[in-house]
Image (cartoon, rainbow, N blue to C red; front, side, top):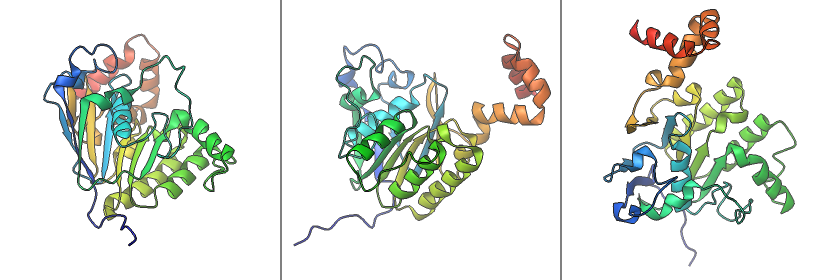
Length: 263
């Protein structure tokens, strides 16, 4: 009898990530010293098909994506579950995948088929697919932006879970709108789950997605209008000349944004 695949249950399939505090004992340095891991009762619920994680560099948003992807069976360099495009044996950097041993994940149902997209390793993964003659290869013939969008369209068409780390890196604003439409379709149909880290206010504005912001105080739900990313772009578009003038002065931009928040 052929085994049935897939599920009729709507996304999200990954329901919760929580910390096993006892496994964190005696572990020091990155990635164990991230602020949101200092809460020994840390847990994060996923309540919508698309979850968007934002935060400044160094807050651990990409690390969190890597950790959850590793728990789901993906290599830290990204790609699908059936290959490892990058050899990590001589790497000296530490990956968020190390957090796999201190985090517990809860599924209903467990749907781990999908893709882990990382902008910084896209070239290596795409080159690997060329070398092994994958039928889904040749993402490098066009521009990076076109290759990114083609990858998203092809790999995110089926039911599954998809991890995305800064997918806007090679996308123009117009291309970001194309990705936004893909994500909106997933959000509305609830036939897949996406967990994405981004700096793009355009992607943050996805309707009905849950937006989480990582700061030095931890992780909290927010709206795209309340993120520093949106406020920065808003300040630029409202008065570009003054914005740039302040930005070019030492500490000028910080003071400019502080005054804008008080208006």
